[in-house]
Length: 258
Ligand SMILES: Cc1cc2nc3c(=O)[nH]c(=O)nc-3n(C[C@H](O)[C@H](O)[C@H](O)COP(=O)(O)OP(=O)(O)OC[C@H]3O[C@@H](n4cnc5c(N)ncnc54)[C@H](O)[C@@H]3O)c2cc1C
Image (tube, rainbow, N blue to C red; front, side):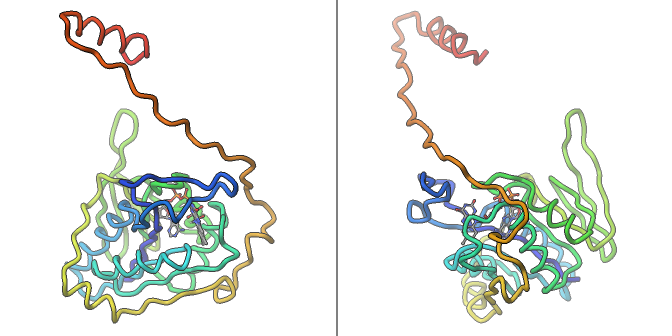
């Protein structure tokens, strides 16, 4: 069994995240880049299967700038066996469709039986890449799973929908995306960090994949304007002079919060 985990490098959710208002792209200097937490959960699902099935191979794929190597090293230290970074100046500003095309081409090159992704990146938040990759590969997709159960022939999991819980299953090869309710990521230990330095970590360009540059794509989305979110205004301060409850209720009602 070969499991491929899709992992994106994102700005640390605890830091002050900024976009470049000229390009609409993330200001990478403004915050610490880290593996997206949802992708650590994706990897944890693969690791849990590997813990019980030692002949499992886990490869991590990331499309991103060169410094995303740091994210891949961390995921290798958690237990992935190999990693590939697809990086190319032509990919800067790639939209979701182009990202999915590139990742699907990389999966065709690495091979794999099961692809595990996060349901939504914490920065881009398109939530479409896993389904797009599945469509391009012609594989079934099980989106937004809170838990997954893997066998040699199929993958099964549960997803919450309005009014109930669905149990979904698909034969392998398949793509699944997991939610933040899914497996909590483990911490890297010293042995894992040392081993990660020796694990295969390759860097592929568009030419290595035989994939077309986004500039030549027949259809692509283009950012036409970017506006900074207005700074948060300080809220009113309520001093309890005996009318605090009424003031609080008035505040909630006037802001349509109740
Ligand atoms: C040079 C370069 C610069 C980039 N700069 C930016 C940037 O400034 N801002 C930005 O948001 N993106 C950037 N990207 C990445 C790319 O544009 C986005 O990943 C893509 O548009 C996905 O959109 P999303 O985050 O909404 O995905 P979603 O659909 O929300 O992602 C869902 C899941 O798909 C998988 N996935 C998504 N993207 C990737 C990826 N790149 N690699 C591996 N797995 C992935 C993950 O498992 C993720 O949890 C850059 C890429 C390159 C090569």
